[in-house]
Length: 377
Image (tube, rainbow, N blue to C red; front, side):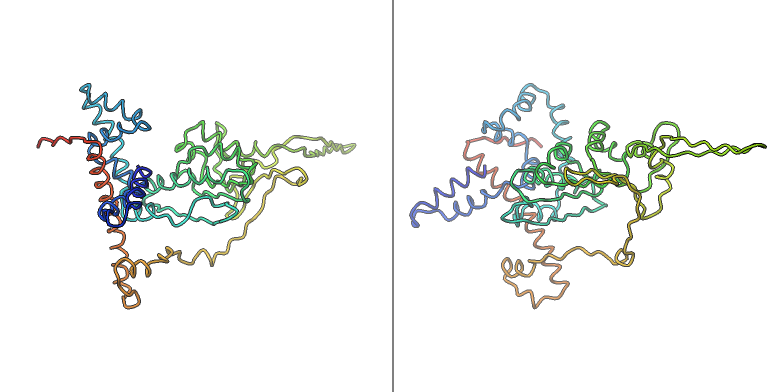
């Protein structure tokens, strides 16, 4: 639809100035920028009989909506309502002024390793709303992975801490192929079982096996079936160690020396690591061979730095937005008034997205001559 209204905007602007319709110019300019995730959320929550009628007019999406239309026309309304509600209810949880503000902006592109415009992108989740913001992170990350994993780009690294809090589709393919495109992938996981719970057993195993370099802190030692500590110990391999036994008798002393394969890092040792102690294993490259691949080490942490409070970064362009949008000099405002204007910006943008979708639906209904029936009650 964006392309459609951009074309209409171009046609209207190409007319002589005295023949241009200012209302249409404003509407087309507004509707040519409705291709964002918040707009999609609002469109999903419109009346489904209207959205079905609009979507079946476009051949690219008509095939996806056709089963729902057939179900409606076939009288399967109860099943249809259940399917639609199962999608709408989780999606409605993503509706928030803050999320809409972030996801309707276009401050930069996600090709962070673009040689012409390299970037460092840092994002953080809210632990209290992980289930909600995790969807937004997954959406951005899925797009970022496609843009980064290409030939002819700069060396780059992707760090994901607390990986199970977000679902990254295609992560296994990224790990398998990104190295050839000079992209390093770092994954932070509290426990393998947590990854299995959120990604499924098969995909979690693939992700864990594809990671060649491993760093691990203390892991719970489990008796009976092999736990994570035992699996890590097996992954680090075994080494030949000399075993010496001395036997004393009345007449002589016997010394036996033998070679025995033992775990390089036993599971019991992994389960007793102190804070700051890590075990791990590296993988080398051609021409960069490593003699010592498996290690146990201590990482010093600056405890004073960790005690410092971490505040959210300020909205850097807030003063400019207040000045441009509301015509108010921000230097004359108190901190409380600045906060009020910030909340007002978020709410106005939230309402604008909703109005954009209503305007889009009205234009599309009029364009295709769709008759909308009033609902009873």
